[in-house]
Length: 433
Image 1 (cartoon, rainbow, N blue to C red):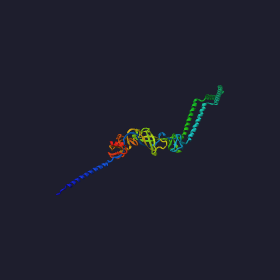
Image 2: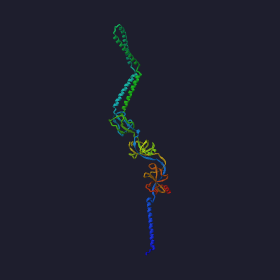
Image 3: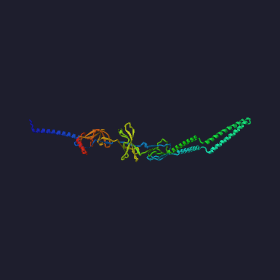
Image 4: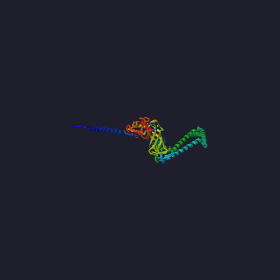
């Protein structure tokens, strides 16, 4: 028969109870350890600011390239066909309006001008003679010719009268009588012609003759002006101040008036061609400011203005081309140069904004971390326009909400936080929530 003493039994019970207590402590410690892994025991120091209402001057980043202004661009073509005798410029040269850039062989044009000039002189002499009328000696000659014709006619009339009596007595043959009569008729016609010429000489030049001569002279002068213009066109000049950006002409080549020989662009002002996203089209107006930074001049910024907005959108994207006018006094902006720019949109008054640093991206959704009851909470927000430093919040926040700007990335929900380097009123506001 076995017996048990009370003391060993008590020890066993105490040992069992102690083991249970130890097991419970281990379990509690394990759970506490798991909680420490998900949420830090001490508050995480973050930087935060209040969401507030403010005036916002938004902008959008744009890219584009330098292009010529159409009104400041000209294509040089000859007015007449011919052989290129001389090239006075090369690509890249700066030229002035009226400066000769190309020259055609002028010899054919010079010959045509000389011929036209001689014709004018001839027509002018004829007109001058007609205006002054016949000279006195010409009138005197015409009077003498008329008198001579009259005397000859009278003589033949007397001879015919005498022959009539002789013919009646058959003393003159019929043939001879007819021959004398024919001579009389010729003398009468000659007398009439001489008398008419004398009358015309005495009357002077008829107005119709002068008008006809004047018309011929005017036509000759027109031909001379055309010949002179053709000669001038052999000298091809620049119509504006600018730079030779393209030169296709070669000395000695034959060209006609349809050929483009050179392109001249006034580069004192240029366009930056940009594409405005459709989402911002309603906010972009002519006159909007654009800050432009060329790729080849990263330390230089040009201030321009939107001068033109295309009336047609891209069928695929809805984007619209716009032209920003830039001053190019130093001539550093060249056609085709790639540029980056910042297009400034109209100022927005009294809108809810937070720093750009407060906004994170969660699978394509914008989120911010707010502080409530001294703990961090990630919430989704709907954003509007933004600047380099601030962004408009359309939905998700209220004025006065504290949003984390530094140290909030990856914090678990309800993580205890404290504001670092914040004004005392910020700490007090957090504690009171």
